[in-house]
Image (cartoon, rainbow, N blue to C red; front, side):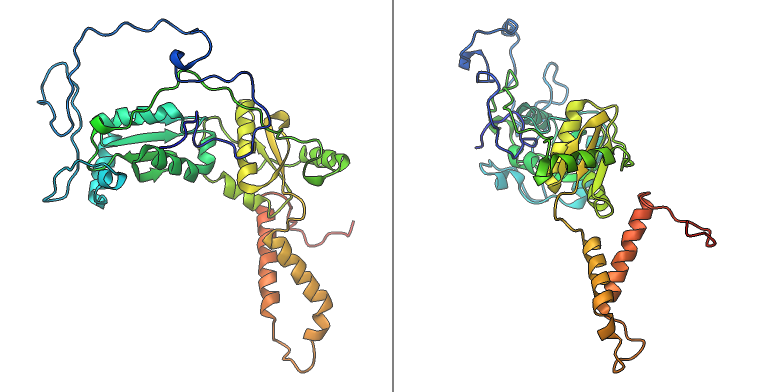
Amino acid sequence: PFEFQYTYSEMPKEEPIAERGPQFSPFGPDTMPRPWTGRKPLPPSKKKRHEIDSFNPPPPNLKGVKPVEPAGPFLEGQRPILATTREEVMGEPLTPDEIGDLVLACNKEHRQVNIGKDGLTHNMLDLIHCHWKRRRVIKLRCKGVPTIDMDNVCFHIEDKTGGKIIQRHGGSIYLFRGRNYNPRYRPEIPLMMWKPPVPIYPRLIQQAPAGLSVEHADYLRRRGRRVKPLTKLSRNGVYLHLVNEVKSAFEVDELVKLDCRGMNIADVRKIGAKLKELLGIVLLSFEDNCVLMWRGPAKLTEGEQATQDFIRQSVFEGKENSDASEEPNQVDPALLQAAKELENLWERAINFGMVTTLEDNQLDPD
């Protein structure tokens, strides 16, 4: 139903400029144009496996057979049906009490699927369906670079697996399989034996990016060495609010730096590429494992635009607004709004440490 890829949530939007090495199929030795270089396959098992339908579960104490989770839960008066479409598999929406019971049962055990820096990979789809055979809800724990854009991860999880996210807390996702899910009719997903070759993409760091001259770019990089980092990112952390923090920091200064020391340089580059894709910023350097970003050319923030409007109206239209025909205490609403924006801009600058407040009022001009 969809094109197979190694990762579904972390594919760059930029078009590759070249291929890295010869192309081959990652699905096994039968479909490869090169000789098999892996281990010898295991011999077939002599033990006879029991094929058990989820609508006809085995006795609870049957030895040698793992129990298959039956379909459900069902509302009063309903029974399982043979579903063919996604809507039929999901059935009626879950009630809040049913969601609470399913999540509580899922938290009582350590069964979960870990999503790392590669995001939702192809082989995870088969793993999720294997978990659904034994449990109605599976917990997915997401850490690292994909947590910058969790909405994208959740979209691909629901789109590729056919399940429904019933609860989401931080990097934890609880995925429901559906009321009428039957593992005997699950999709057959071929496993990737190798990671396919990664194509070559354009360079993230340009010598003179976004129309800047080489001298101006070097000046911004030298200035960025003195910029205080916005935050320090830990390895395998959850970066849910990083996009909003960076966006708010650009309201104060045109340069923002993230401290990523202690992380792998590959992860640092992925973080920079993710922010560039989401915010449209310009990457300047990854020096000392720190991501230095520039806001971009000809981009005025709302606070800066309000400040310029306030100054322009105060200087050029002050005389017209102070006519004798007007009341002396009348205030222009636009100027009042601009003043509030200017005050908020100063408060953000103080909070981020960009400016320093002096308490002593008896200071010399020098």
